[in-house]
Image 1 (cartoon, rainbow, N blue to C red):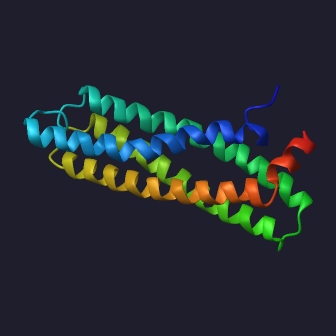
Image 2 (spheres, rainbow, N blue to C red):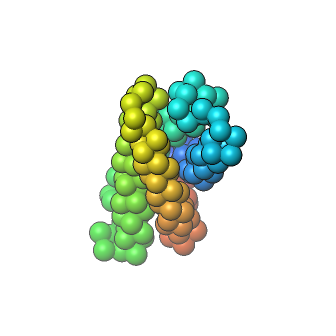
Length: 167
């Protein structure tokens, strides 16, 4: 059995935040559309089922992002001891690590902001929801790039073989 931060469990963890980052902008966009077209109070009512789903998705994504960053960091540590610093493989790993850390920071901000919006009843709530939407779109773009760099690590540098032989 592997530990929670084993590099081998990294692919399991990271696919949850990636999947959620793909659907989150659509859920938020649907919430705005629903609010506008049906003149409901979905956005202004924190107990709204759709808003609750969005909040839960952000929270779960953040938890799995933390686990993915920890397991990814363990993988980076392993590869730093095995590969030359200026090798093509290490450059690909470093590019992936940088975008993953940025993805993590956006996850933390999204989670904190969504908690605040969930309990905030003030007049600026709608603007904060637009900020969440913008961050979700940014995170979507980061997920695309992180997936591209992660795929490059696995398929072009043979990282999967390194890890499977190490453990």
